[in-house]
Length: 297
Image (cartoon, rainbow, N blue to C red):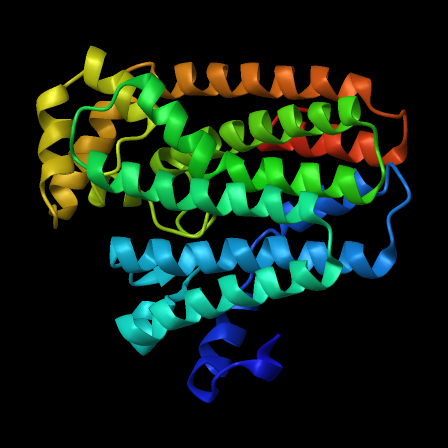
């Protein structure tokens, strides 16, 4: 894609696209498609599109969050500045839809366009809610848009390219959305108890950014809400205050409640897969779902 890029965007676009990551979304797309009979060139193109869209959204997220690092490396905005970062994200979005135009399937364009709108709306909702009181349903709504939307689009696009039936594509859509919600909840937990860098950021990043995640919502209602709110309200909390905020969350059963909810989403995802052909690809999709919450496949 970099062949048509403005000269100043070639390097930042290349760095963003090759900075690592799990490549989970293109994997979901390929597995979904291979339960049918996709055209290889279109399948590869759509897999590239989903990863490029995801990368573009991360660049824009980092601009909004003023993030300095991701996956242990400087973000595009930190390395090149706001103007180049914004232009790089815009360019990647444009190239993604250019590839969709080449594929020429309006159903894919619709799926990815809806996901892109959801990314923008979800990020805006999260930004407006930073440091504020957030209800569980509001959290779920922006998670469906911001995180689960691309998971869902990947599965729908794959099923469409594979020529699956509408019932099977709907099952894949439900699977993708449930998987995306569980993935976000797992990310929320890792922000509190994981190893720095494992999910692409350090411990407590969400709290530092004022992002109200599901375990934080639970902890605010049953723990030391004063300490947690002080961390959320402070744009640059001291290490001591951040540690106190994390400990206040972990002193409750918020993590356990979030894990339970995530497992419920995974159970729903696995149930939806029952409508799909019994195949190696379906087994892989089941394994992916189980892995998200650390369960045995």
